[in-house]
Image: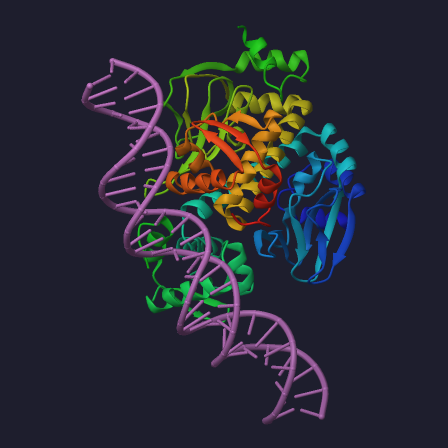
Length: 226
Length: 226
DNA sequence: CGCCCGTTTGACAATGCTCAATGTTCGTGG
DNA sequence: CCACGAACATTGAGCATTGTCAAACGGGCG
């Protein structure tokens, strides 16, 4: 696939003018990462940002003890590490390919030059920043004000919105899901067991069928305990 | 003080061109809030963002149970609620004046028009977004990977950086500090007691004198328990 | 002086983590 | 096709941390 086609496959970029897209296609660099491969480390000098064309990537922080917290998991069409554009400093977190992944890399300096020329490009990027900020605020809220069952319920309801169905697959391992929810696999397993016992959902492997949406909503809000 | 002077007192805006500043001064609206007064609510339609000229403002989320988590406390010269520019939706959190505060309000629609005209203004704003994002990532990390003593130690070290001194005042009540660290006053009080016992700091009222920086750094990283 | 609010302390409960063991799934190779 | 191993997932017991509830303390202000 041509670079231009790939750029157009990214939702946030597809509305850009042809000239903006052409400019971008001249600066991007294609890269491939194997499953499990590190894309960048937290302490690494940030040289640019990425657009994921295919595969799956996790952005995560590591504690001194080795405990991991996943900030975000990205799929095809999404942009990540875009903060790098504005800080010629370290990346704020680590990134690893969860599956074999193909990405487009946007070098910081060149991209910033384009930004100065196209206000439209800047507006798109600012919209993305706003979205990320909201996601992070939601994460802080969840971590500090909600318990694990509420966080799991919120996540399941979020997936339901995305998939527009009560039946879906989790797409990531339980270990990864626990890390994404700010907990550990054992705790997640116990909470899921309770959800099953209370007939809130059906779970087999990675397949989920939500059964009691009302209960999920109550639990997500912290109005109901399990 | 003239609006133009006030705009120049805001660090992130002071490098803007005279014409940009003049454009801004034409759209801003001055507002005053008394201590304890709500500036906006979470569910409220976001009509613009703010620059704090004098006073103190907290941005916070509320749980269904009434528990509060402070996301940020802003002082003079800082900009807040800037995400509002890109979403004609609800504010993502609540804002309340902690002291009598004087702010400049930037209406969303008018500001966005200026953005389209001045790429430079956009670049400044994007830098601000990046900073906020990093702050939020740090918060998520602290909440999910660190215990209360580590969060307190980090906060004290952060203040030390700002003040460039080992001696300073906390500026906010213990209750507010607890909420900022994602805990409750009782827990904070107990942790502080331990810090005092271990001679890590001296504390009297709101006055703090850091005594064992090394220990604070170890605790902040989670390498050492108290 | 006495009241009020913020703070501290105490006793207790609960949530979630650690460590260890057991189950389960799935891919590989005999 | 089955057996085996490795990685993933679940379960159990015990414990650490933090939250809840209630009471006492203390400092500042009318």
